[in-house]
Length: 100
Length: 464
Image (cartoon, rainbow over all chains, first blue to last red; front, side):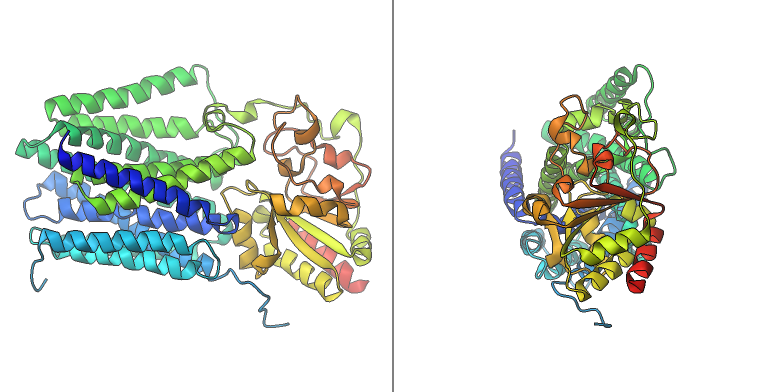
């Protein structure tokens, strides 16, 4: 095992534990926005797709696969953050209906 | 780009992005700060993408811009137009997109490294994991979407020897991936991806509609772990941290959902729950009959009530009844009735589904109560109004050891002074079992489409 791998594994372990602690605090009320919001975060693979496909040395096959990956990851990121924002905008603590 | 940035600068930007994700999720712990948290996560994502584009060896801007443009249009259109009742489908598709992207990154990077003859064993493991997890997340999510959208039967689809077939297919996926690593052949890894994709379909097909909250959460976890794999492949901390957070979130939600059904995750995924066909002949438990009621009678009951608890279920989503239920609650509150909503963790088709629908109907979230907080209040409640919820209210979960849902935490509506159940017909719930609540002497049934029933109730209330 390389030193880089040990570092990566350490980062992964700490992030996973931190994730558990953070997500435990999220109330059930917000579990749907939590899912769609974290979903958008998993779209961070877009960075990987850009690194592989956006490099000048990429072959046609690498380019083609990366293109699809960038499209999918962008759908994930843009769709996820927007729909989460739309949902969260609807949660309100008191009645603010116009007719009341 | 004006000037190419060094890898160190970009790595610092990734650190900032990871910090934004962590704080963003932290802010999701309260509905007051949640929207800000989501914005923060989005900013982190924008920073990560922008700095990646500024790297010296990234220079195919038109290529990247085209792909991002297409994805952004699809994503934005979907996010703006999706109905709140269809949110489980939306999240399923987003999971699938994330999984597919992770597998794509692994495939493309494998090809590049193999071409350069620079494929260390450590990286290979991550490539395999990312390809297989990503592949099965992609197709599993599409099947989940098709089930939720009712393009395929929501009930479990099973065939003889299913488990053996599943085992063979996943073994083939892993075997092909290992072979790809041994030979540096991208085609073999592509075949591994295809086998994983087939496995994803086989995995989700037998799972019934009511178990979708667990499945969606599980696929959420897989999409995150696929991202982690891609992060290991590229040795990229932003991917590892982002993926780990999502993996943790999906895993925790999976466990919570399974716990709310009193079943193990393995039982949900491999159990084909709907197999247990009850002898439901439409007349209730042990031949006992149910008592049907009319909107007028329910309106009278409601007008004498001091405290009403509304129990929504998937039927509310199907009938799009949330807005009218909110309107009915308004009328009750204007007349001094205390109204609360009882939300079971697995009501609906994904975690938190009911809360989003009621938020859409402008119900203040301070009226939404989770199971542990609302159950002690049912004994002091005059009327429990069950709207399109079935299994989550079934007292058999408490008393009947032979029931498939025995031990599942339920909303104890049977402890209220009276119960009115709005239900389309007497067909059993998704679990395929009878609900003794319906033959309880204090229960009356208001048959019909949930939305129409609520509208009739509102009319009857106004006439009162």
